[in-house]
Image (cartoon, rainbow, N blue to C red):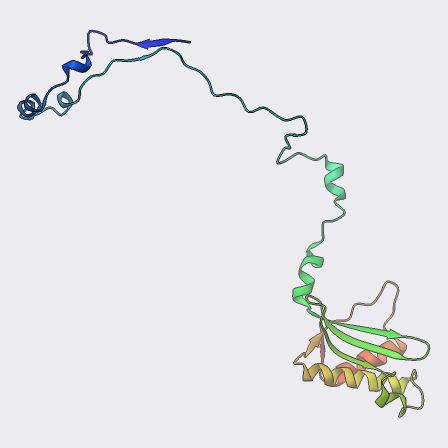
Length: 189
């Protein structure tokens, strides 16, 4: 595609030899029109070529940045966490975990965000194992609750939460542990 921009009668043309010299320009500077100080130029384009289009390699592909999902697919979203799951770690950062085995009672308080254990109490510890007559009775539950409360206060934790497992009721030994922790000045949120 060849195009030529030629001068019309409105645009005066000059060749390269006809540009004003220094003395001619000095004479024209007295003119009040600034347009007259610019020379007019003839421009012609003989050939115009487009840059080469980028070629796609055999192994390359174009991936869309966003695709629309169907309503059924958007409703499933198995990896999407609920509001409670996303904010619970910050609203209730310390979590109490109590485990009852046939021989011992274990309890620990841990920080949800960092999984750092704040305080631990177990009836299997050397200081309790030899003192207590039974390591799983109601008296042992009270001692574990008292130890957890004291050790949590030493770590500057005065509020914690307990999430019962599915189908778990807060009664019996678990209820005794939780009540003892509350009696010793820890708030459950």
